[in-house]
Length: 302
Image 1 (cartoon, helix red, strand yellow):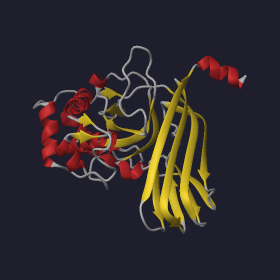
Image 2 (cartoon, rainbow, N blue to C red):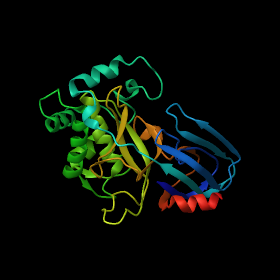
Image 3 (cartoon, rainbow, N blue to C red):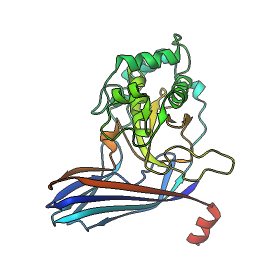
Image 4 (tube, rainbow, N blue to C red):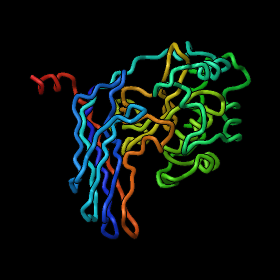
C-alpha cells in the first residue's frame, strides 16, 4: 500500500524564545516492510543550523538550532511511503518459557538485539502488579506460543482500558495509566511494554501513523487523527520482531506506518530539545494519511 503522509506540529510561546535546539524524529523510516519514496521537512522560522543523522536505533533524526528570537515554531513533514507487511504465523514463535532465555543469550549488540528491550528504560520500570496482570492473561502454561500470548495481551488491553484523549498527558507514568485503565496510545504501549518485559518478553515502542480512512466495511482505528504508538515484541530468532497495536487490539498491518522505534517514548519523541523562554507554551499537531492507488503513482512517475 502506498500513502501520502502529512504531519504538522505547531508551538506557540507566551514570550519570545531567545534560542532553541531541537531533535526531530518525524520522517518515516525505511524498514524491511516499508520503503520511503520521498520525504521532506519544512521548518518555520528557518533554522540557522541543521544536521541530519541516523540515531542508534536506526531512526532519522534532524537536529536544528535557532538563534534568532521567535514566538512560534512550525514543523511540516511530507512523505510518500510504501508499506508491505508479510503475514506472520505467530503460533510458530518460541514458547513463553524459552523466549527470555533466548533473548538473554543473544550475543549481538546491534540496535535490533532483544537485549536492549528486556530491562528498565527511561520511561518504563517493572511493576509487580502489572507483571501479575500479564501473567494472569497468559495463564500458567509456559509452553504456549509467545506470539499467541502477546496477541492475547494486546486484545485484553483493548478490552480492559478506555481510550480517552485528554485523560492523560505526555508525562503520565506507566503506573498511573495502569491503575486508571484509561489513556491514549502512548499509555497503552507503555503499559504493555512494561508488562511484557516483566514476563521476560523483549518489547519496544513504535511511533508512527495510522491510515486515516479505513477500507470500505472496516472500522475506523483509534488514534488515526494524531501520531500513533504501538508495541514491537521479539518472538524468537526465527520470527524476530512483530508489531502489535494494543489501542486497537490487533496485529499491526499495512495501515501502520513506522516513524521511529526505541525502548520507550523518550527514545522516539517527535520533538525534543531545549529552549530559553518564560511562561507557558501551547502546542498542537495534525496528521493526514491518504492511500494512493499504485496505478496513480506509476502514472505520476511516467
